[in-house]
Length: 184
Image 1 (cartoon, rainbow, N blue to C red):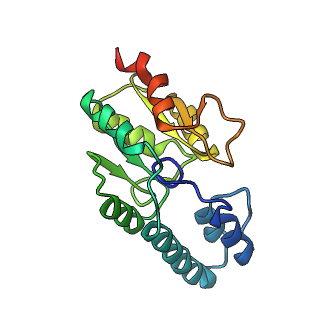
Image 2: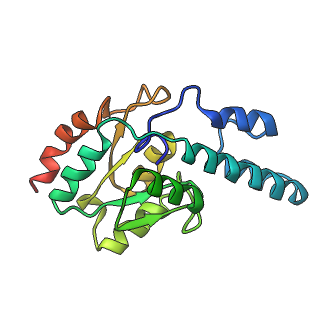
């Protein structure tokens, strides 16, 4: 959700949060928190959820994302929002930007990405095979989850994913790349 639907932030605030709390840079914040002693976990998690809510409340939509979503809806495709964010922060973004998805899965619903669980739950919900789906993401966790689920992945560009393929600078460019899938 963060850098796919929303305008990417640079510098990204998560590395700063990880550094502040001594969390490993190569892990999800949630994984880093879970590895901390139980007495520390609650306070760090509460601070992280507050950061997520703040970022959601001040978020801006990525330019062109509404047009992309509108076209995908006109094609009667099954759309889902799969995110490692906390459900409260997702609700803030959805209300703020007046977005709606028929299926919304967060880290409270299944193991977060890079595990494939969120994608697999969405496939099961819609009765689709991995070959019938395309996953749009922006991060290494998205790439890993899509690969593990056997789903083709495409990416919207961020300052942190310059080596991802296929990577699209703008939602309109992504829509053009998806045209062959829309015809099926």
